[in-house]
Amino acid sequence: MKLTFLGSGGGRFATITQKRMTGGFRIDDIDGMNIHVDPGPGALVRTYQFGLSPLKLNGVFVSHSHTDHYTDAEVLIEAMTRGMTRKKGFLVGSKTVIDGYERWGPCISEYHKSIPRVHTLDAGESTKIDKLKVTATHTKHGDPKAVGFRLELDDFVISYTSDTGYIPELARDHEGADLLIASVIRPGGDRLRGHLCVDDFQKLVEEVSPKMAIMTHLGMKIIMNNPDQEAKKVSKNTGKKVIAARDGMEIDLDVFRPKQHTLDEFKL
Image 1: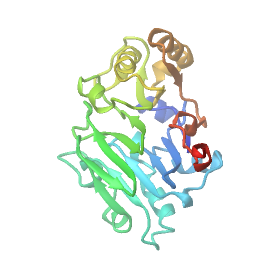
Image 2: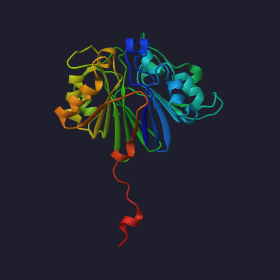
Image 3: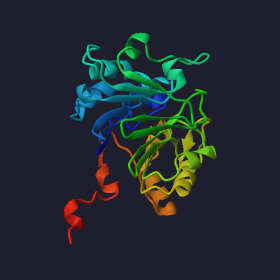
């Protein structure tokens, strides 16, 4: 199982300037499936740039209706379905992304929803995709129906906050995560409504206690303020492995999974 960041930037100005790429991230070979999470501007191009193929996607996840999270979703759906010619793949999204809610969304056309299986999730709701359990986690963000995603496969949990301010529900929703991926837009205690700053992220890491935590969706202030140094500070204060995502960064997730025993190990 492999995690690839097709962009580590987020927020309006990082997106507009492309100081960091904004293509979201991809998880390959999770229960034999390849999924792309929050494919913002450039996701398609960055997929090819970093040696992956959008044609091999099985699923597209979109957490909410802001452009730095959904812009390339439809073209990835077209790639996944071979130009909308094959009944293949699945789309998981918030209510605003899939159906629209008040003045937010929808972000995916009826045409692009007509081929893949569509799963619309409100916070707290779950769905099963083969063996993979997907739960929508709570957020506090400008999009009132925005969600994060908790992915559970056997005894392994990947949890993604998406964009959110700090709320008590975060620790509960992401409890037990082996890998915690958080959108962290500002350094230190410099808070922006509806987003995590590094101090908020540190508190969440302390509460969740993951094997590894990754800051991504970095805004301009943290990009210009040495995100690696911010990650080292959180790691020192929490005793956990914490890193800041970089564009194109790959992580072998199998090293964090429970050991897969073979029959030979049980021979007497």
